Image 1: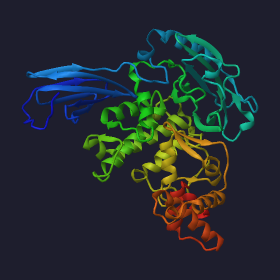
Image 2 (image 1 turned 45 degrees about the vertical axis):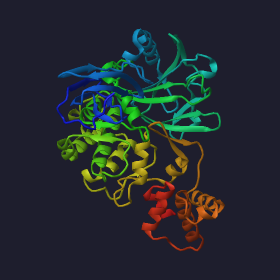
Image 3 (image 1 turned 180 degrees about the vertical axis):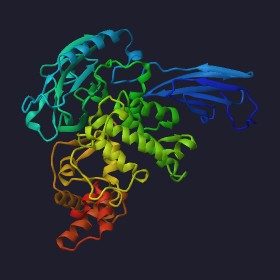
Image 4 (image 1 turned 135 degrees about the horizontal axis):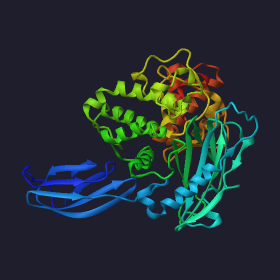
Length: 495
């Protein structure tokens, strides 16, 4: 293998063509990256042997290449990767069976919950489709899973009860579909110890399609992986190769996943919102993150690379405002109609929490925050959305995260790209006091702040002491305490 240490820039030209959303690395014998790109590489290198590596959607592929002569052209594609949603190139000859099974589920959708049914209400379809390689009852992809409307647990419905099943190849597929009122729904599943929840958005005029895959035999009883998507009601369930980006984007939003954010990748997602608004939500999060990172200190550690054109970043304001405006119309009543055909009077649904989060994250590109701020009392789907809502300083927050919402979701964690929480409620004061008790139990070195992990505990102790003495905290100090404990800035006035 070769190194580029003494390369004078006059070597052979290497052209590599891969999938548009794949990261490509050319690695020399010194284990350094001699060339890097997303989708393609076109670069001159020193003659020699290199390792070519492609990474896409969690899968990777490698091969040794010899770079010699004047020009070397290589094509390296990853056709199969770990996908939860059914994608045609990955499932091959199983596609007709999967599509036929899913369409039967959609055709059999029945109204739920039945209470309060009204012909005037808009109803949307929600389908859950799971698959598992094991096929035993213990590995049922829908086992120990329930769904219910936000704050209406009395209407909870077991996903396994009444689900249809079909073995396709070496996998067992199970699923069901319902007609339900647009709004926020909660997926509730048992991880073997406790009930864990995450939100699902159902929007008027769209199908919400939840895909699940339960883990391998190495992790029996593990919760399933989830992919939440939307589609036009007449759209196929199995994605063709143009929409493989939906799975790559889902993985891209996972915490600390080191992918490159590039123009064409963002373009694919933002354009994809017309057929799947989830692509617009994820694409705008990544676009805003790319802008934030491009403006950050270059010496700071960054998990995600940024390779966006200067003109794209310069036009960030126009892009953000247009996409947010379109998402309002797509998700709040316009359905799959073009936004130009949707009057504001049709926007009758509440602002989805994920869209509220994007408005908050993009605040500097928008008009001044409304006064008073609208209340936000339902959870988002994505962890990135929750972080944007939680960490927004009080002077730029565009929505008031309600205390009851935080109390019901305080014990939260990122589940892949999604926001999930334990099914138990806490009080704000109790949460701060519990943190103080933890601080008291720490060793002296930690309690004094010598250990980094002690900072939140120290702040909790300060808040609790102030409360005991009935001394109000300075608003700036209260906001710092809230940030350390994961409490939204709009609630720090209650600390």
